[in-house]
Image 1 (cartoon, rainbow, N blue to C red):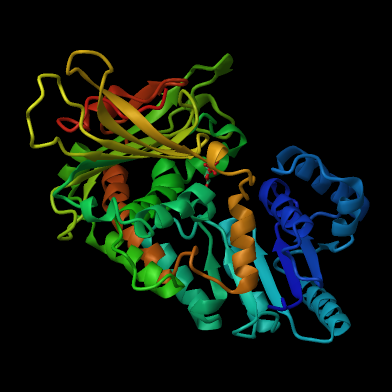
Image 2: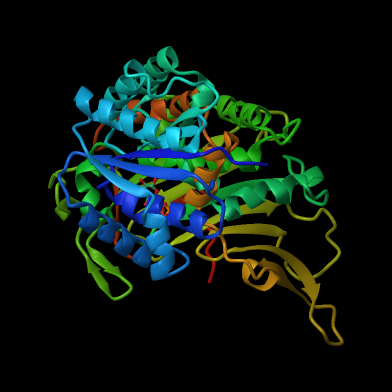
Length: 491
Ligand code: BG6
């Protein structure tokens, strides 16, 4: 398939995302020959910078953050010849006129109308401003070829998300809008679909008759660091649960879509979100634990309390940790609790999904039997393992739980593409499977709204504290009762 020329524009080119994720991803796509022969990357931002210095800064980003390690000078030179910097105010029409001229020049050279990608790596307040300008200046008009990529946060609540959706829908078609959730691009997350629907061992058991409960936990070692300003307006519920964890939940809980196509998959996921039982205010305080980290140590690193972080109020009640229990009202999941947890400044990074199966009804052994457990580890371990009972070699019938493991390291020699590589390539190819549709984002906001509302009404009620470097407050473990004593932990 011949790839269309690609004019890629990044708004917010001086930001962290561009340096850490977008350029390294594009560079890796380039060196692995996934980018079209003709492409150009237009980097737009407010600041005046020398282009050579700008590119050098991008290079250090690649060297520090790219999975392929340090860039080879010749390859970087080839790649960076496709990058140009355009200093421009996002609110001024000149910026867009200049950008348009550049894109059209590039397309003239290629002798055909290629794809245009406009990446919004900007603060939320600029999304509408830029979208409006792209629309009125006719930069993003072709429904088949022109695409917008919008980063999270997509709105700050249901209302603002709806408004933003409506705003975009008036100017672009839904097919042109790619709402990114980078968790969906992670290799190990994409593999869950393959694991569930290409194999027939687990799917017949994937329901309330055999599954006791499910845990989805995304523990982070990092603190809020320099992002205190943003984080104060967000908190863990908005920053992680509303998007990443609910998306993981969708993949784990969805029914098999009719086909592996964007609309069918997104329908199946949306159905999950719409089937989550909404909380009343008293249920919020019973089923949702919010907490904030205090000072402590992570590894050997001393950490300050969240309230002492830069740009954070010393009286802040913003949560850096959330654990919750939810239920999905479908015939498949009726009565099965789903436990979600995420937090910053925890012991270590660990994202795992645990499917806890029920006890065997056959009670013929004397030993205590540990029920089967499937562990899907997303990061940093990349593995899937199944816990089952086995007889210890010897003359007695003694049983112990053992593990059957699949690890990427042993199974494959390929290195894993970064989420952003997969997602950017999908945008260039017009594949929205791993992106959020308007109704999906709104359904996800609907799920968290009762929690946001309850917390707004009672700002400090039941706010817990946990030491940096710990696994979170005791209340989060209590939430699991009687299904488990503790959140599952990899050694
Ligand atoms: C981002 C959040 O969306 O995801 C961050 O804003 C968080 O707060 C990050 O640290 C986690 O992503 P990853 O890929 O490092 O697990």
